[in-house]
Amino acid sequence: MKALILAGGMGTRLRPLTLRTPKPLLPLVGKPLVMHIIDRLPQEVETVILAVSYMREALETYFRENDCGRQVVLVEEKVPLGTGGAIRNVRQHLDGTFLCFNGDIVSSLDPVELLQVHRHCQGIGTLALWKEADPSAFGVVEMKDGRISGFQEKPPPGQAVSHLVNAGIYAFEPRLLDHIGEGTVSLERDVFPRVLDEGLFGHRFSGHWVDCGTPESYLRAQATLIDGGMDLYRPLLNDGADVIGPNHLDGVSLVSCRVGPHVCALPGSRIMRGSVVERSVLMTGALVGEDCQVRDSILGPGAAVGNGTMVTREVLVGVTPVR
Ligand code: GTP
Image 1: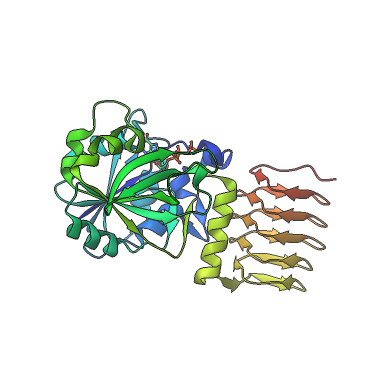
Image 2: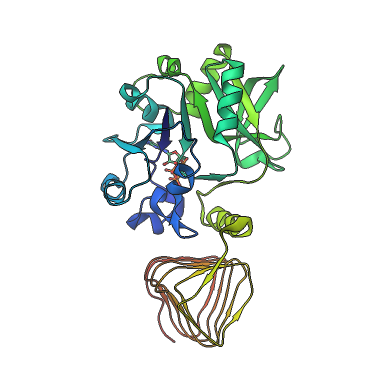
């Protein structure tokens, strides 16, 4: 079986991080975002197709240098074709029922269960559905007699027809391709409403689901994964630091600081004397100087926060001035 991962978006909401690294390769609790999807694929998936466009070379290099245990095929769009156009663009690789994932989703969905429901319902597609208390920021799904009967894109607060949102994970039949036109096509807006009569079904799951498209949701996904068992305490050095778990601390040097909860610090990062870091990530080689406060923030690879600086809800990739 083939699994298709849509990984060609520009990730503008995660800039400036995504100016240097494509979103699927951003480290999330120590491994690239896209690997959280690949590692959960069912055994029967022998080939992963990545629909890529933005920063294709970086993805190519990663999969050339890292064996993910399955055959990986990268298919490029010269210009991004949208989520529907991307599926059409890989049609020569699709020969049967396939799984399809938005490349920035972290979830507890079991794809085996999704496939079971899909095979039972025998429609053109089955969408994983997540119940969201406030669905106004998502694609909302309307159900009737066990089938999807309509869609509502980002409804105003209080006007949603249901609390079930499209989780961006699907099982499809190849005949879906007959309904995707040339050029730029949105799966959600252009294709789904057109194939309702062909049988679109939903599979509701529980556990966790986070679309990591924004700094806030990226940090939410990080906290969810740390709480869910990806916590780690393996600092390179702990010289008098107060550590409040759970965190994911791997190869970080801690010097008389206070760290946690929900901090991910990757190899070569450092937190110096008198600083406090909470609910944040320090990517490889990032530095928090002395007497800083860092909360709800993302420090990219090698980013440095100068002594005495307060950082709240920021995404940093450079160096803030030393005071
Ligand atoms: P923003 O620019 O911040 O909206 O991010 P994005 O470009 O990733 O868009 P969005 O979050 O809506 O995309 C959801 C998923 O679809 C992501 O995994 C994207 O990589 C993927 N995606 C979006 N547009 C395209 C496209 O044109 N081609 C391909 N191959 N993938 C896409």
